Length: 119
Image 1 (cartoon, rainbow, N blue to C red):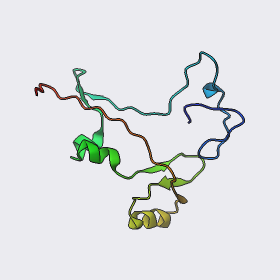
Image 2: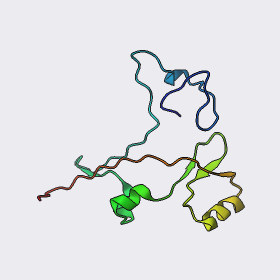
Image 3: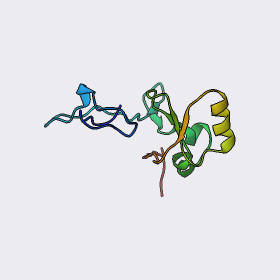
Image 4: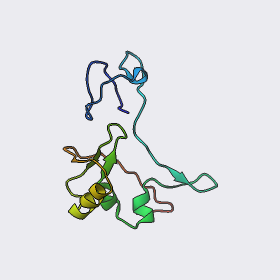
């Protein structure tokens, strides 16, 4: 899904803008394709925004800049960052994926809150 849809214009994946729910209209707020993740404790306290940073031990900078693989579902094409290792690309092809190198980078915004932090 795109953030905005214009009937006569195709999107980055060459799909036509046919989603009436996301057509640009005056005073209308578009649907969103972003997926913010906020994880909390059972008490409702926010504990993390980005899983790779906490679960995998990556620095926040590394979690943001790590190469990405993306599948839009339609068309049935997997796109990948130029930084993905060749062995990974080969393995995905062996599994039958149709693969294209992405011409675009993703955009990531991260927020981390430190409890009991003083400078």
